[in-house]
Image 1: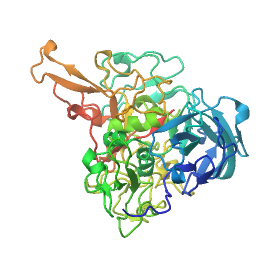
Image 2 (image 1 turned 180 degrees about the vertical axis):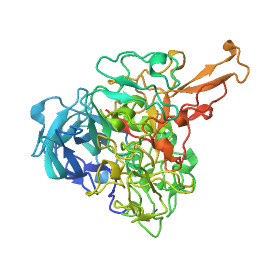
Image 3 (image 1 turned 120 degrees about the vertical axis):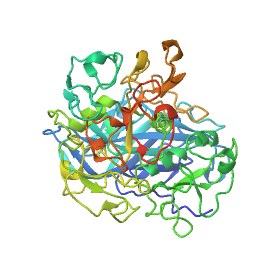
Image 4 (image 1 turned 90 degrees about the horizontal axis):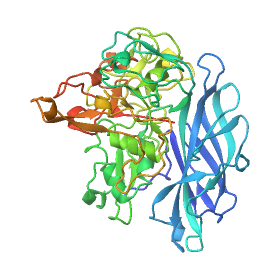
Length: 542
């Protein structure tokens, strides 16, 4: 087994380990950085934790998009058996709720804390207008553990996670552009928009969309970047053995077998298309999970999780089940098809065939033409308006999230959305809630349909109103072409590093528009069922 390089990571999702409530191991990252973490009342049922947080490319503006970025902070905990050396534990990780007492929390300037109703985490964000990097700032939080410390379990391990988010403010927006393939009808979404009939919304929707479905008018937060490979590794490393089986391609035999010095590819055999997630330490059936890491520059010549190992590359080969499980675990929710267009276009008037960045200009970025490949500073060797990853060969792969943004770029040259969300166009397809709503079986998601931080024993999401697909029978309708076909409650939006440039347009829904058996639109993955593809990923909202 190859040595992990100081157990550090370089993605946009950071974690830190509390050892027996007394000491913390810390790490640095190229964007969100959490350090100097201390438990000020070790052994208490509701630990008070202080830490410093810093991140780059932050903003809060009261003009233009009138929004801000933030970091979503949440905590996982694990019991440690009495007398365990070095706090070693193979017990399950659980989501730690926070208290709802404002006096239990504090943060230094220039930040503020924003509380959420379900106490699953907090946001830290700028308290006043400003643009630039956020320097190290002290935060204090207090946990409200479901299972308090007892004389039989006096010690616990904790992991703190931070995910960069973008505030999408309340407001009207225009849906559809009237030209793009599969576009919705050209309508406006306002504070008076309730239910939407199939005739009103168009776009192959064939039943009424309920009033409670998130249509984008109300404010929400959206992940600034696509889920990265390091984020997915961190997720896997808090799961049980059986849960890891569901969220990787590994069999129980593979997961329980020594992966050797080079590790074993966990998401696609051969670690194709720039996915470098590997099993680096085997698990033991039902008693010890495996350990995963990124390994873009392969072992044994380069340490696991080194600065060259692709932690910040967008995570591909994600099934819809993988994405929903990740979002449930992170106490987030999936984005909707309407929110995708709101985030992209903002309040601006629709422009026919516009790309996510609000213009019809586009420049090709490819994984075969990069500076510093696999590092946190990976960038394209090309530049220009609408710099994005599309139109490449299947042997290529996605790029580092946010690769096109620098201190000198604007919305168009960085190919960002109106509100500053990165890579909504290209890199990997975004899996969003939507579909045709056949016979009123879909569109059940609501704003309160949030993940609870826990998965089933089999590693599946368990949040009410989250849907994947229904199998619709055609025998009763007299269709002889097939007995049934899958009707997805998910759409693929935004294009990928492999798709045509037209798929990166804000209103393009061409991936969901081809016919399938039964004559319906081929939403999601069509009749093939859930699957992992080289150019599909996603992100979450709240």
